Image: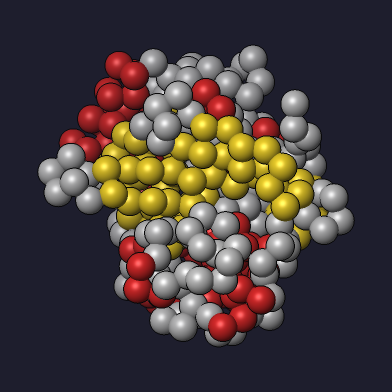
Length: 306
């Protein structure tokens, strides 16, 4: 287990072997295919964002926490390949450090780091690998580690209720994002099968416990699919469900993993967003990044280089 920055070089350098790299057409997203010591593979992405007003650049690493995933979400490429194993704390942290200039030579300068943000939104369900993810966030937060704070780290989960309650009690600095995608159990059962075990009422209750305990809001991630979950009726149901919850909603046009899942047209996505905003729910319509290299939402998977 890693506890201090001194161990980040000697203990991790070489633990991941990069075997393929793809760069998006706009050069704002890089996707690395890593081979692990047991020859299994994972994908990790680096995304660049620039504030048009301040000119400040945000450099975000999207890390994987498992080889594959057991959650089986219908619209996710990772979930369609099944689960192989959890990643260790070292393997998670190594994905971040790979993008630090000088890492391989062991000369990272703590006050001149390249990575500004980390999101646990890659392959796997982070809270299903609870202990290793918990330790990883502790290292990321620690001033002796990566020194990133609450607004620089995001953990995304499909909604493992017991683990949400447990992590609310941890003294960790991160923002919680919940992959929602539907406002009724019948549809969410189909899109996110774990909903059958932890239905929406239980999930919302756990999220409220989290906000009460941490004093932080929750981000609800909602991928919009044409004709499936993007109607104004769906928006109205979402408003009713989230009433009284300290939250924001992040909308994104979904990606086509299976033929039945087509991204909602932007015009409809804007109408959906407007319905939520006029009902008092803070809502962002995010731009999907790296789709041309299959690095967008739900597109990461284990593979071999072509």
